[in-house]
Length: 390
Image (cartoon, rainbow, N blue to C red; front, side):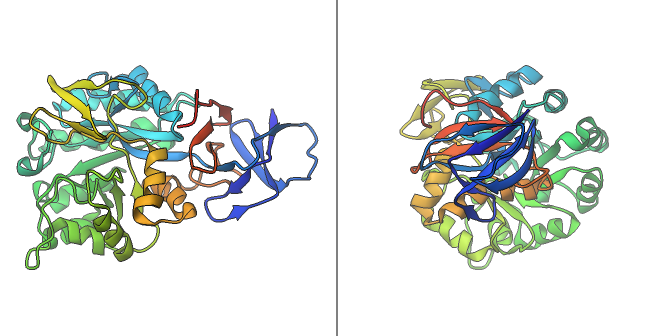
């Protein structure tokens, strides 16, 4: 069935267009046409005056949502429930994220995500394994008992994972560069795994070597990393100065001071900073607590914290992240939207079908009002609007 979405301003991922309409054919974008065009066989779908239709948001770091934690529910149904919870906040594609656990649990989660990715319109485009090859001293809330260096069996099992997804998704692995040898980094990259540095105290030089070996990006820049020092700048500065690497940013006003994020944006080439949520089960619910590793986590004043005050993920969604990028970092609307869609797609190497409004791309869309609140979403051409502005 063809649909012609009319009445909204369009943001293609490149430019803003007035007086145009978006033509969909099933799960695919067919064309962008003048608003006055008459398309035979297409049902006209009027959208609210003053609204903006943009590429759907892509989140590469989502631990949970809708009351579900992927570590506790490492199943296809769990992944799909998380995606459904985030859809009302404009996220049309995501990587369900499993944090450091025993490898069997993490592998089961990855295989479940591959099963979910095969379901059309489910919104799952891979899996993010955050650990277990992290620096114990920079683990945050990750469970120390499961943190270690990789062995041959680990590398064999991880290297086989991308085949489970095929072209449907990506495997993203966060590791500490000082915990993994360059040869092993190169092997994982050859297997098709996207590697990001994080939870690390790697030196500037060690991080640069890991980048040469194939490290592609950095997980929640500045968090779980040492601060930049004049003589030992470390992994954070290496991330900022690596022109070809992407960085994920949690823009909640809590995890990183906005001025530091603004500095990083100024230092980095445009297109290499992307928004992430690091969201947990409370997203999309009124819950004030949840459990992680058997420990109670509290939702207070925009923070998710343990009893000891350690941050445990973020209390933010992608629509909030876009608004915060504009408000806290003085990012223009178009760039904030790219940081939430086009740039994550490029990081994952999926920008041939996601992150833009263009012919041949998947019809993953978000409809926003003038305050960048979500009015509705389309995933693979199917509309699934929220119950209210988000």
